[in-house]
Length: 480
Ligand code: SAH
Ligand code: SF4
Ligand code: F3S
Image (tube, rainbow, N blue to C red; front, side, top):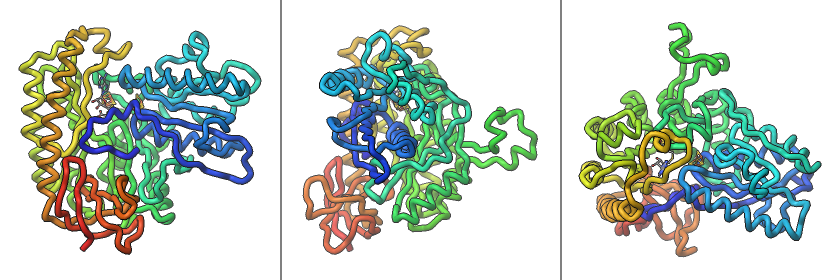
């Protein structure tokens, strides 16, 4: 998913159905629309791969599809409302074409389970994020008019052996999932319930996937997970154990995130490596040193802080205080001096006072993030916060606080972009600029988007670009 910079985006409600794969042996057509985080977009590529082996090509024309899937997000209420509306419009099409199968995949499938099938009668198939291997079987059940539901979560599934069909591809950048699930239990968050226990994927399969992409001409991979820094591989068998129960010998053979990153970075200096998302409590100095050592590990960290107030952070069960977060930022800037930082922020969490909200603004002033994803708190069913705390900040107050942080962030984004003006950066060309086909767009290692005249360069080239101007959202430059 392309990040839209310096504009509040709610990634959970932006749908996207893109590109097609075409295997000439295939006859049936799959349309898949994805919502939510990058993990979901990456999962849709796994789904397309699984179904490509059972006779399906993807299509971006809804009307010609035999199967319509929506890969869903539950992180905020709005995300689920969007999905319900989409399902209703798919059902209107199904009225003309009753043989069309409609399925719900992903986090909302996991959260509401068979409700969308049995009570709301909006879908024929319900499949949770760990059950995609069962899709061919579920599709034949649905074809026979049977209820097809599989929402089993797994402690082991990582789809390590499945080679994703690159649906979102510009041929230059790609996502690789390295962990699934989350063990953190932030009190506001549904992800641990929808995605299950955290597990790490076999490092060999990750490195091979990255090598394969590089050989096919890709120049950048982003390693994905809800919490990539807690990546830890301790063998196929180890997946079934807790780390604490391993012998010292077994522990010494483990591979952590810093070591994994190093392996991927060593594939080629011409392959850029990015990663998302980092949890502040798990980001180690060890990793930061690896980042500083390899030029091709991009100096950009997305490090959500959620709130600048330590009491709220404790209620959120984030595992750090505001002071501790500031100290981490200091270490990051010391070890990787030209790093850029972005964050996720929630306003109006249960019982947040005006002073506590100001602490969030203060923390933003302290760090001056390049970019932030900002949300007002949305209570989610069955989360710890929903069960234990009152969602007592009025909507209007949440919104006003949100607009204050957006205003401040926009100011910081512009200030940060101005610090890049006058400098020259290596830019990887990702495609045509959205505004003009005479210009390319790409990103500097720090992740800011640059547009510059095409001249004779090609998509996928690395170019040195001198930045001569900027807006809050974009750097403007010229190749040197
Ligand atoms: N694993 C990532 C983020 C996953 S969800 C991490 O921990 O950083 C992405 C973002 O959505 C979160 O960082 C948080 O800012 C926001 N979010 C999650 N649950 C939310 C809720 N109930 N209401 C509003 N925002 C929420
Ligand atoms: Fe949710 Fe927290 Fe896990 Fe992120 S770390 S997915 S916010 S529980
Ligand atoms: Fe949404 Fe699930 Fe991702 S809830 S943010 S799609 S893990």
